[in-house]
Length: 454
Image (cartoon, rainbow, N blue to C red; front, top):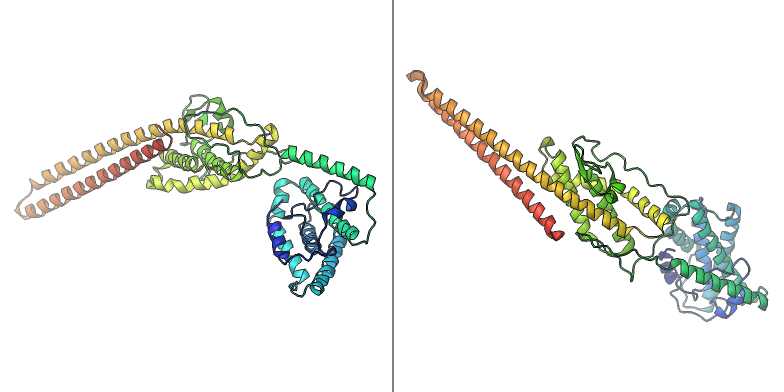
């Protein structure tokens, strides 16, 4: 569950404990307070500890249930029942806070409704998104656990305060056994899945960090459907190089491992999806994939430049924008792919994704070399055309200067020299531009090759 609630409790319970049985939970009374409904629920659920005072627990229950009621999609019981529980826990919090202020003159005065509103606001930062992402049925189970925790808090308080009869010893033993079994099941469910054998591709891959890795969200219970890749940023373009198994026009041939994930996709779009995959690996596991993200993004921009860069005179730097937009567009698809892989195999997909994207980048590197060669050939062709034009204009200027009478000689000579000078300047500018582009291409290729150890 969310850690932010623990921080709220720290703020609420910041005053020193009074060791008052009406305020402070005593673990000795917990077994006596359990019932069939609360036999397996954690004593502190997602609070910082089981020492959080009763008044803070009732505030949290009122705020959390208010958020669940307002969100409305994953209520564990009818709304009327939720309303009654909210009112009950609020009244208990009011009573205990008033008692606390009388017992301790230094205790700060608290506005119960304001504190409940804070808890509710904190929950609503995440609850709507969690219900959408995790699913209504799973969140109903979570809300049912929250309800059981609040009921245990109420029963614990009443038994400890003498307002309720303690549970019979035989039932206490039975409930203790149920709780131990539940803890064992929870521990087994949270154990990391075995990792597949290590792979050693020719490029740098993200590595799995076994210590200190963030906990994974629960696997969705409903079948996860990965959305189609859809239309690329900028629309379909027949010039895009596509990923395939067979050697056809405009297709880069890749092994089945890669084609299974990216068949017939534009190569630059597939690389952009690999960027999104590396970002998600870093977010979900804590492993650094910055090198892969930058490498795949630059390679995607270079492939896109080779396919579409001649439109409107766009240079290589202008291709970073479409690649970034494509990565963001494919983000939801990548997140769904993560959940689908876990649901299907029981493992997180970081090793598989690293292998697939590493292989794709290798084949993209070969395609980048072809782009470079094509740019060089085009530069040579443009250079030859510029020289042909320059020579033709020089010959024309020389021919016009030799004819005509005296009255036109001076004007003809000046005009021919101006045309020749203008052509020479245009030729120089063209050659400088091609030289800059070739130099930039070589630098990009060398930088990417250095990163991947080639």
